[in-house]
Length: 290
Length: 267
Image (tube, rainbow over all chains, first blue to last red):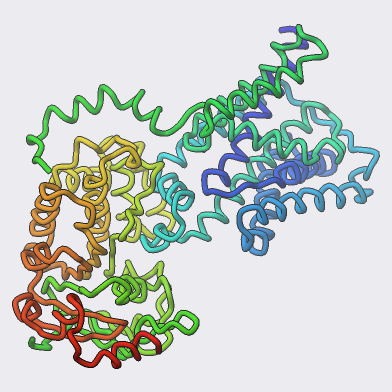
């Protein structure tokens, strides 16, 4: 496999992981603009654990995810008191704080960046991404998925149905941050060098874009969004300098044509449910008029 | 009206919004297993009573008792676990969930804790909870909509789905806020049939806010009339129909005591 292709696929797999980190809070109706901060925590934690404690990447990366998730759990309590635009601003500030702390943390190189000794290749990264996708899919096939969507759709009614709105918001925020941390760990161990500047607001916004454009209502949406928006700029490489213009234009067109994302829940149900619905209808008593 | 064995009691409940006294020293009792209607003109405070019973707003004064247990300070989220479920005046189904998933939201209060939340309802084809929700939809003749996104369904169908969702909580007291509003006669009839089947056997006590007096007369055995946040009458639908005070409230006062009503409004 060419180095270029492997590079693109690694980026794709890491972006897919990041996208699910953004998907969880968005599925619960929260915009987390501090994802890059949690990715940075994961990247630095994983690098530190493998550099200093000589942990294997396959152990260091999940632990890094847990560290990022634990930090998210602690900050979630004050941060998730805000809502809407204020939540977006609070999480944005959170990302900035993480970046500023790392820049001043000499033990991990500060502004000079941090080299990472242990190296992982595409198969490990792709397998981890696949595991993340499957785990999120499994999670959303449980009552958790229904409850999170209920919180997203109508907090008040969800509360009256006995759903712990705040609990699910905190869980989605912390789990998403843990996944972003895993993505950061994957990135660190493949590119062998991390610096705080990489984990900036533009990374957070790009992750959120993957999810919004792919669709927040289904588990497949973030996968599709990350795939389309990692590969599209590469396909547009032929147009050289104009590729980011073309990319931005594509983003706007998709947002205009499919404001709820490329895949929506209703659409997916129609696609998947057709045969099964007919099946079900066959064994039923005749419909009462009403 | 015999006051024996009320399942739900409000004792001297008051609620003010700023200077507006929406509920004023309201005492009422809903008898166990008796389908009861809460009626009154617009702005009488009927929906506010529901919001106080379900804990959407805290009361300013008074107590709310469910089966003798004081739930006045119980958080809204936990009240459904005590057996109070409701529907909403403006449908509040979850628009991004399917009909079946919306009905499964109603089971949430019976699935607390990690194990409950991680029930694989959309994974295992014959999941017990999923099948229970499907059976409830089938009983309500709504199974053909199980996979539909609820936002696209007709209004009357959505109202009936909301009723199924509330019943999935297996409530002891079911609060229905204008269940027949906006329904055509055929839909109203279907709803009434559904309510009668669901509540047969007296397991569920129904308290319904409704303007459609035919619906109230056909469904309910007790009627409580509110006006300006106070109870002005109670009794059987027949009694209420002939109650002069109720007639005055609904049809306008000829001359009797206009000042008192004025005071109640201004207070």
